[in-house]
Image (cartoon, rainbow, N blue to C red; front, side):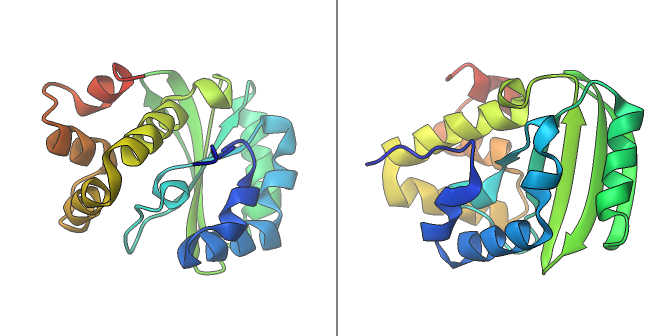
Length: 175
């Protein structure tokens, strides 16, 4: 198995149909280039091929100036359907989020003062990718089935693996 370089979205071009569609949508709006100075990374279930109907495309960004980042988001994406921006408190500090719909995809941009590759969403994705590779297609389908039933990704992994406690922390302990 050739390792996936999740730092660029090019791998989506040779993925499943939904991944190819995500690549086209993200490339068409130029989001990775427009947010290039914020070290954008695509994270979540679409890169892993475990997305379900309604799954969004999560773009993680490293931003030091929340107001400046919000201005950039409004400037480039404020015209898209459903655009909304918010500031939320997370385990890693205050984050600026924007959500909008483009080319059939709900896109959520998440920026915080933590380098993108160190953000919890990216770290969880790397652990989940490794687990999917190690445990094979039956494991993958179990995760998808739990997600279809309404469970979030990390709790689904924790349930299938029999992990106890906070599922988000439990997955990080598997890094």
